[in-house]
Image (tube, rainbow, N blue to C red; front, side, top):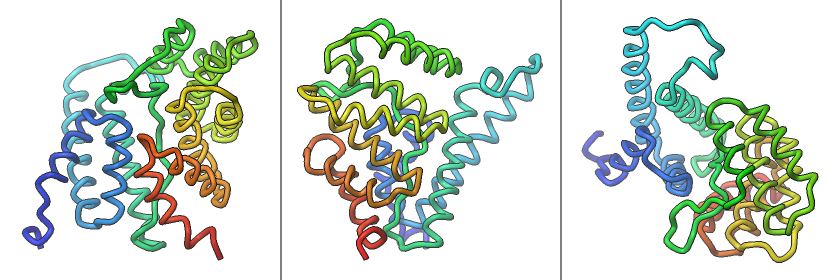
Length: 249
């Protein structure tokens, strides 16, 4: 069983994922592979569980005051727990549907787009940078309020798109899918904005619709992502294939 399923390259990707060393785009591509391979879904779950146990043991060795979960849990443990939840969710979803099924992303990266060298490229806007830092530190409400206030100011379409995309991403990661969806709609309805920002707007919009079980609208957004033929085209195609049987009847 193990020999017939052995895939060294995939195992290396899983190891990088569990240790937080993959970009969001690489993570998306990895999940597109994992949802079609039950063996490696199990493998990923096992690796993630082991990491969480190790990190939890390390936490037990230090005495710390009691804080809210966002302040107390360190990044490594939180990431491992989130990964386990994601794996279990996908496995449960797959058990009730075809092996081609997919789940919406559990979290969205806060980088606005990738530059020509495929490295994260953040805007120079200081408010966006500060909001991202606040969100990373667990001060989500403050980050959201800051970006909402910034959107009330008059900006170019390009900057408005970047602010809306960042705000929507933070809201999505906080579970506010309806609010996130509204901000992603702002992005895709703007004229003359960066293609990478527009593509990510469609990709994130599709995932927000997916989270809300609005599958036909999700399919349309993923189709627009695919048609742009940029960084998210390949994984969008996987989602389109998986949703086609559900949305087209």
